[in-house]
Amino acid sequence: MARTAAAAWLLAATATAQAQPAPSASAADWPQKGRPVRVVLPFPAGAGSDASLRVILQRLAEQTGGSFIVDNKPGAGTLIGAQDVARAAPDGYTLLYTIVVTHTQNPHLYRKLPYDPFKDFTPIVQAVRSATILVTQPNAPYNNVRELVAYARQHPGELNYASYSIGSTSQLNAEILKRNAGLDIVHVPYKGVTDATRAVMAGDAQLYFDGTASAIESAKGGKFKLLGVAADKRLAVLPDLPTIAEQGVPGIDIVGWQGFFGPGGMPRPLAEKIARSLDKVLRSPEIAELVRTQGNEVSGAGPDAFARIVRQDYERWGEVIRRAGIRLD
Image 1: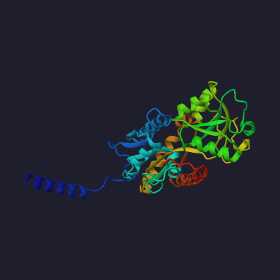
Image 2: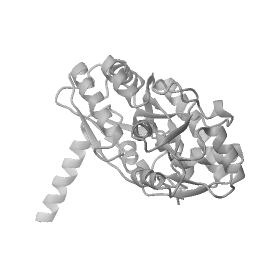
Image 3: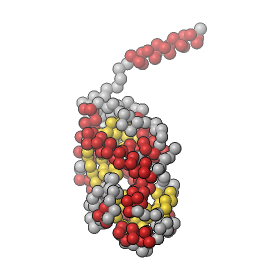
């Protein structure tokens, strides 16, 4: 009898819950006071993107009067955090802040993903454009990419290049260099940025595509020599360092980025309002300077432009990964 009553109560409660209207996804009242916006970051607390994201969200809270929290969900090459957002309601109260890997590289590296990079997400704004820099040891017998190419051709198989994981941007850029310059260099994958950096400093590997901020910091400390920028143009923070393409090796110009996404199916007016709010923060002098000192630049590309960028990079990275024959499962 008790079980029957309990079952009846559960059915009634379920029916009542199903009858309740879904939370509003209206652009007009976003963000509602007292209802925090959870921004999932697929990296651990303390990572470079974590610190900058927190500053951005603090300024966004001041501007909108809303509440924003960072939810760090690291692991599995951003898959864990991305899956969380892909399953969330598209109401503007769960967002993803991630890098180029999630939507343009992972789909080609894994046979089965826990999300669809296009159907399960709504591009909102490309916040930051970034680049990697090809670095080597200070005492290397080459000072730029042209000299490196000449040296590597004279010493086939003798140079190792480090990456912070198999399938990472650090490996993919090196694979483009290897293919387009016709080099015989050997890949040595490491477990994370710290290990890869140490390997180059110790001489266990001679080449590495490092993030801009860390490359500049290491160069200032005399630990690295900067050879070239893997981007489509020179960096404002390093105006005298030529791109790799300028030095005779084309094709290493796929710009990295960090950006905000919502779950798939987010109403257009809501995505546009969030994008406008973020763009205003990103273009403030404080945030623009923060981004610049990290060797990056503010983008602010909104939903339509960001969607085109994601699709274009998806196609380009797919070609690179297929040519290199890289799979992670």
